Picture 1 (spheres, rainbow, N blue to C red):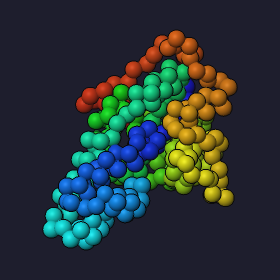
Picture 2 (cartoon, rainbow, N blue to C red):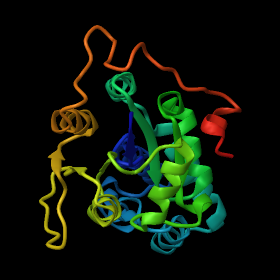
Picture 3 (cartoon, rainbow, N blue to C red):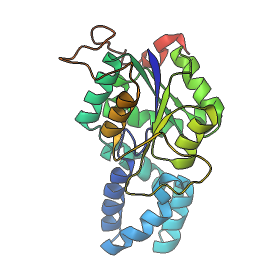
Length: 247
């Protein structure tokens, strides 16, 4: 068994697509031109901009009297409603678990929103656990957050992999720990000279395939059964976070 550390937004879940849906609907509701979408995408910066800052920028540009908290809640609710788990990604995670990997999400962001995404999409059924920076008190690429993930899963970091789309947070964090990694390029070129991913992929399914191809001890299972026995199912529901006695 080995640890499989996974980013959440724009790795397992299409955060960018969900934001486009919300922003398009929001612009239509306030009567703004559709070509304003590019501006609001720039402000959001692929989720790196604080939601309160996004709200303030939107209020100022469109001269809205809406309280900032209402805009923040609209963004929060819109992301939860519009994000989806690709069934093929769910299948790939199940195959990974069957092959002996222990999948744990490591995500920067607000606990309330990130956990809501995980539960709303049903992703929690395919994970051993998850660690969110706000709750953990430390963010990627700080090595401590990856250590927390390993502790919660009762696994060692040694032998694990990191899969994510952020050069600094995901691949930089893995590099600092000496972990192999797969970078989801999302149409970008690698430009960071200080470190590099072990493999590059165009999506989460391809990324998991890269992990298995690289690791000679773990191959894709046949007929739903892996080297380590029958399919394992993770707990779901209110007690979900108690997996491994970590809370």
